[in-house]
Image (cartoon, rainbow, N blue to C red; front, side):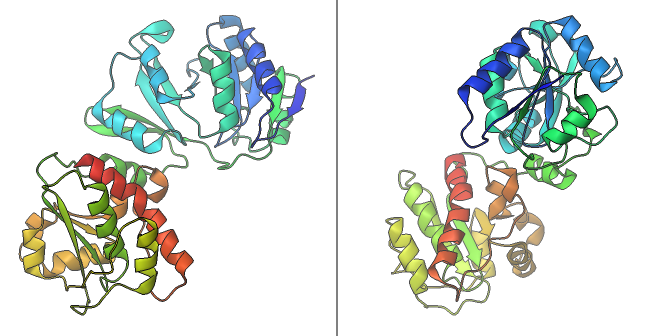
Length: 365
């Protein structure tokens, strides 16, 4: 009979975490939640325990077990170095629902092609850390079946076949991770999951900006009274020590000489940035050509910029939407919506959304 322990996801009981880690170290099988589906953990240093996983899941022996990590630095135990594209994918999607298939060249897995993932789940991370040995973690269900979202679904397939089940309720995503391998000339999909091909393409094709090359950054929205003004203010505040870099802003349909909206001034005051002096300006082909980097708030703005550009083929390389620079995949490709005419909270939400990509952009330059 499988022991079934319930744990609070927001405040995990250390005693339950320790028990799960001890069972794993001693060769037992433990099912526990991740951000995607429930995982079936096993100490991969113990061949007899690994054999039990294949038997319990009815998994084909030629399929290696994926490994869960608590943080990306643990890859150093298995690989000498990482491909640049792998580094980009790790930066964008870990922790999260992406499994990277990598060929190990050091440690106990040397010579094997293994899937690695860092789950975005507190309980999984604590169990992995506490165990202190490499943990093989396929999904906690029979091979070929849908991944288990709940403890009840785990028991339906594996009750009596595993030693311990850590139950934290339904998983957040409820769909398996996307599994990819970075090959010399392509990204090979071993399994399609929660992360789409489009998101992976966005990550891998994010602009590479050389330090010292960008002097003038242009932020573009519609009226140049809120979004682009906030972006300009944040950028110039955070880039204060980079004296040779300056941000300006403009609007695709702006009336020249208009002050920012009152709510824009208020939320920027909270950031200790004064934008009350700002006067709106219209986007022009001359402004486009004189800027080294142009950041649009939406895809529609990006298209408009290229439509009025005197040299769209060249300028397309320097025109990007703001959320291409976001640290997390959750925001890739999203438009920064216009808060104009809405309450103060909408401006605060808009500003909050822009903080991460602008901070990352400043750091890049």
